[in-house]
Length: 139
Image 1 (cartoon, rainbow, N blue to C red):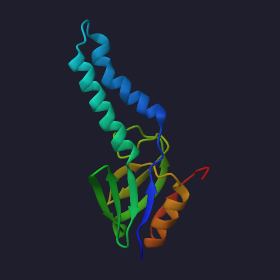
Image 2 (cartoon, rainbow, N blue to C red; image 1 turned 90 degrees about the vertical axis):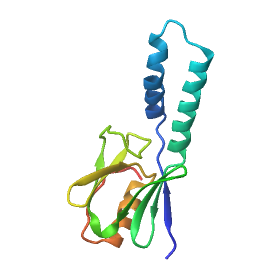
Image 3 (cartoon, helix red, strand yellow; image 1 turned 180 degrees about the vertical axis):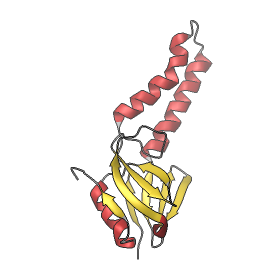
């Protein structure tokens, strides 16, 4: 079976929040150098790149979470217990506040934001029918 790839939902509000956090140090400083602004731009560009390239891959045996060039996690379908809608703001490979919480390995949780949450959850549940799904979504 071919891998199914879900792009991440992207939230510009969350991106603005991250930019504000990165920029607070520069706002507080009285004298900001060109090097400081360059560093801020590079960091913001890296965050934007990672957020725009986040994807969730349903492979034959596991859920693979990638951010840019990095493989963030690989979760075997057999270890997933529950998928539910969440708005938790914890740091995660989810560049949107419209998230899913995936509970796996008897209590570990990761937050993701696939573009089509219901279809994503259904595909995971097809791989592991024991998964409890509680997903509310417009799509």
